[in-house]
Length: 447
Image 1: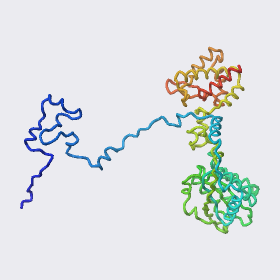
Image 2 (image 1 turned 120 degrees about the vertical axis):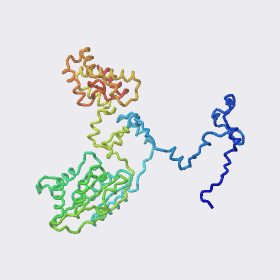
Image 3 (image 1 turned 135 degrees about the horizontal axis):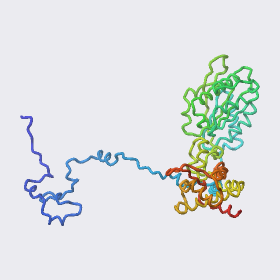
Image 4 (image 1 turned 90 degrees about the vertical axis):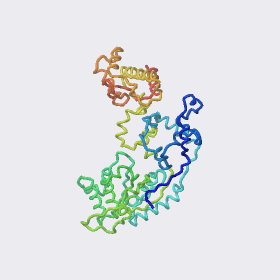
């Protein structure tokens, strides 16, 4: 039997030769009866019915191919209209009134841990575990600052020295903790020389490792998972102190991934009973985990953040960065602060402020941008301000104008920046429309 023998295959979709001949395109006069979505070339006569172009394709996509065809990645469509930038921040008074109105009539939920009987039992257990050579780390929903401070005052202070570290403060560093420990009278009288943080930590470790040292040290660390304690050097120094049998660490965490900060050896290591002289000190934490769900608000921990602004509440940056950007924030200056500043300047300075403020209000009304958070676009050029101030006999020289602006610049009541187009300096007042109107109205009533 020959290997290359072929057999005819009958395709039901293929018509006979007569049908194919009949399927030739008709004249243009017959195309009027066709539907709008069917072209004359796609119509067939005879046995075959009229088929759409997609039905006549030789290669038909499978469901697998169609999925990747219609879901292929493309250019990410993002918008520059960020919600936190479009929503105007609130003043401190507006924020307090809104929070008070929202919480009115709502009964606060109190954790059972806050009851006196339960707290005494919990704190007694903590002392027992610290005595056995463990360190304590507390987790759970709610601020734990008040309870840990109460534990330090009622229990730890009666057994030794206590040092509290507020790790949630952005400007906190490990050097501050070591300086506070060296400020203890028992260590301060030793007149230890200052040096690097590594030498400071080693000296503190050696002082409490002495057999003659009977007083223990209790270190309360609020938010040990904060940025200042995430650095490798800070963790190493704290691990050195925590592994000393006479130094006890009681810390709190709030981040869900905080346990990833330490290795398994650091987490489960036990403190030595006696530290041999001139031996290499070991490091570790010997954590015991405790659920401290208080359901209390983080008011003190978030005091550095601008909770009245969506963008300022979750910045997470250092306070220095927030202060640097404060002049660009529409709520960087409140009405009360502006009124105090204006009350302490000369009458010419008040007239200059009113001149700049009225020009800014006119620019805002002309642009119909009452809810804009970018006030720089409504600022006034320095050259224009100088010319207008000279015409109104407010400042006759450049030196006089800069002298009047100096008080406002120092208190961020007037801020400036380089113009994006054309060069020059742009000045504006960091108060949104309704607040600026109130300040100018109060200023006009006093004059």
